[in-house]
Image (cartoon, rainbow over all chains, first blue to last red):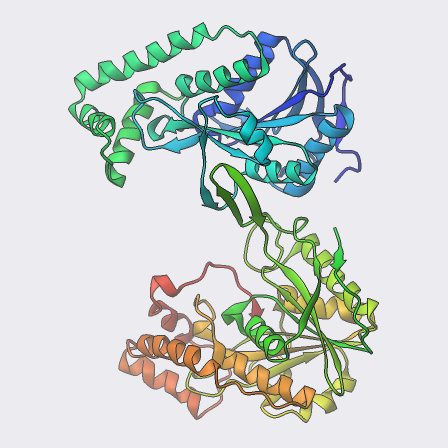
Length: 272
Length: 302
């Protein structure tokens, strides 16, 4: 592994910014990349640095997904106007501890971040027509208290940690307050995009960080997705039955879940 | 990456007992049991985060309480004649998955364990593991030794039920590999001028892929440890677990067809030198739920 893991292109003028982190590997509902791409575009973020991949990712070939070659990337962007530091990355394969500390080293020592937000979708056994919740994990009770009133739901969980939880834990050790946002994604949209969850997450960030974003375009995406599925429900009694069951709060068995997920996957296509 | 010592006990030329999980968990059961019987006191650890991804997160009512990593802890005890250091690792660090240590991380871990020992003037290290062998499960497992120098042979010969690995037939003059950290530590110790001995309890070849422990072999290893330390230890508390495992093994054995059983039972009377088809055939009778992943470890017949 290289001694200095960063490549810094330019140093922005940030005043104790908030750090937003999203992962683009196996992210449920493509939530992290969608939110971050939207923020970067609308806020005019500048690419400022990257963590060099050697030592963190395998280089025995190349990964491809949806026909496209995937190059591992771990990049920082800055929005000076809104005082935001944004990090979008593939999840490292090796040396997680060093990698996550590198993220925090850059954020803390070069940019003096004041707080951390991580973004990840969580699979939920709800219908796409249901209201989504954002489940949250805080690393300090003070931050939890200060975010009361944002309609966030507290998560309770014991099990293998996601990379966001690992980052949150490391931030806690450094005294950086942080919260992991886990918006619910209906399981049959897990491998696709869920504009509803994306909008919900952006709405929270918009309000919390006073970003002044217009999220109207997501209403069109949500309507489009809902219409596509509604059309198919009319044609396919099985899909309709399963979604009806979910809407009534009933559970689907494993086979039913799989069938519904497959049918929606077919409907929305590879890039849906 | 490093060693964290909570206290610096005064120890005189301590000997180290080191254990990680492996086939049948023979080594780690032996080390943990000895550590427990001797009431060894924890005094340090190797920080886990450089070696392992956390295995569990605890989140309660929206607050991240803690992450749990596999532990790598040092313990000590002063006996009348010998001072002891124990090191118990809950997992072996690996690169690219698998259960047993390999790669740079494993080498670093082995060196850190030894670094800690050398800080206290340690001159000898014991590791333990499984010796995959052509024995019958109803036989008492022997303890097979691999040592860092010939000078240790005489000493090893004194111990009951203990043989050098070369004394087991069909091994091409005692050649083989001890995979994982229980083996790697021997090499690192030898390279750094520390005597090292690996004591491996025999486990029947066809049980080496099973997911359950093999406490029978751990008992054999513990008996030798007791002799080495000149202490008497009561191992009756192992009876219950041993009995439960024996029941599982007997239930698998009961499924063997008569001709297979007959061939296998020969092991009780005639020392076998070749694995034969029984090694593979018998494994078929192990229920799926008792099978471990495909990775191998321990010492194996050539």
